[in-house]
Image (cartoon, rainbow, N blue to C red; front, side, top):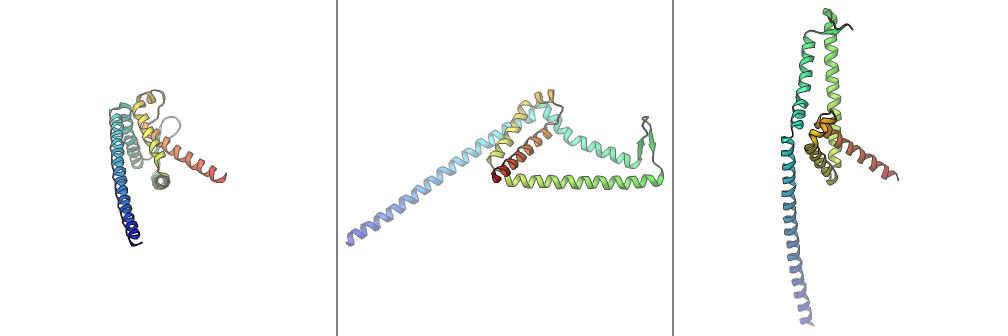
Length: 188
């Protein structure tokens, strides 16, 4: 009886050792697979980024994405210095002294209000995007980026839209579609 119990204990210990070895091997293989997946994923992203950098339409749109708001800012600053309006006959008419200051203050308040609202919307969209972040959104993110990188010149020939804004619209659209589908499936 003691020999049988000792043999059973030895077998149990041997089984535990084998289980630990198997778990270590599975963990090592999983780590290896993750590192290989990460390597190829980074390689894919690098190729896409190089394709974007090489794409002339995307380069122009990237520059325009930052240049156009800066030009608007400069025009607004010029208008704040010399506030004028168009009288309908393509003639610029200057505001009077007191009227000019009221309009300047209202314009600054309006611009600051618009900036605050747009910033709040962008922050909320980023929060929701982070909550929904998973492999499907990663796939759409890389897919839309790849499509724009490869087809950027063709898209620009037929659509006069900034490719960066197109990329943002596609990904926000996917997010809104997923939220709609998730809401519909919860109600059903």
